[in-house]
Structures are given as structure tokens and as C-alpha cells.
Image (tube, rainbow, N blue to C red; front, side, top):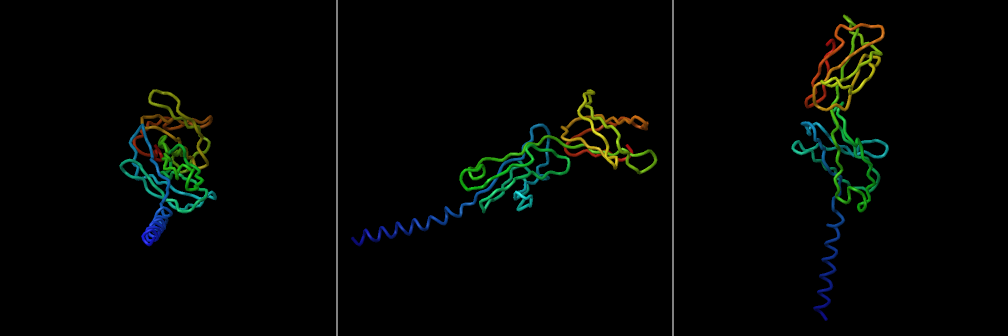
Amino acid sequence: MWSLTVLTTVLLLSSLALEPAIGNEVFGCGGFIKNANSDLDFSRVEVGLYNPQGSLKIKTDCSPSNGYYFIPLYDKGEYVLKVIPPPGWSFEPEQVPVKFDGTTDICSQGKDVNFIFKGFGITGRVEIYQHKIGAKGVQVELRSESNAKIGQTVTDTNGVFSFTPIKSGKYVIRVRHEKWHFVKPEYGVEVTTGNTEIPAGS
């Protein structure tokens, strides 16, 4: 009888000792920044955890070698995972909602939340000749090296234009306006491993 009592006590103590370890298990959201078409400096990309109101709670860097990231989650609730890239870099999706309950959500189940890189950006500025004033309302067209039309936009109030997402490669930018003539209506540009900013006055 004495031996049975001791054994029961030991088993109860062992069960109690295991409970904190299970309760303290750290969940989190993890995954990869993925890129299939060009080289990418993963170290320049971050992933942030936001509340539904848009306030940043925590952010982390991505592994320079493979783009992996991990953000720990301690409190149950609704969150939003967002990729934080340099300006002009495009990803899909840009954000992923997470309703963390410790059991059924994508992060609690250990599934990867991946962000797929779509392309870089091309930015530039059209200026009035011999002045440092931006030209508003100029039609800007982006074409491939084979003359296929990629996109079209209009300069803003500061004469600035941009195209994104753009894959690595060589392109031609053409500008036109119904009343104005341009010193250089075409400009060749090459996108490699980052955003391409066309120098003013080019």
C-alpha cells in the first residue's frame, strides 16, 4: 500500500512538471522571401507583424542566404504580416492576415507564409529644359528592348514617374506631350539587381 501511494505521488509530480514546458511552447510565423527570376539581396527585406489598426508590433530581418524569417507570437489575437522591402520592390502578397489561436491558424500549424518577389522599380523625373522644374502631365511609356509595350504613366506635379514591378532586363523609356518637344525623347535603361533611378537631366 505504501509503495502504491509513493508511485501515485511521483506520477502526479511528473505530470505537473511537464505542464509548464508545454504551456511555454513558443509559436510564431515563419516563411521565405522567394524569388525565381533574378538575384535578390534578401538582407534588404524585412517582415513586420502589425495589429489590425496598422501599428507595428515587431519586425525581423530575413536570412541573407535563403530569405527565411521568423517572428514569435506570444498572445492570441488578430495580426497582419507584411513584407517591408526597399521602395519600388514589389511582392505578392504584400500582406497576410493571421488570426492566431494557438491551434488552427496557419502559424500555429507551422505552415510557411511566403512572399513572392515580383520585380523592381524604375523611377525618373522629366524637367523643363535649362530649369530645375519638374514637368507635369508628360506621357511616359516603357518598352522592352524588342519594342513591346510594358507600361504607360503620366508625370506627377513634380515631374516624377515610376514603373513597378519590373523584371531584370533592358528597357527603353519614351516621353511625349501634345505641346512640348523634348531634347531626348528616348532613354535606354537596364534593370539589374535593384531599383533603377534615372538621373535628372538625362
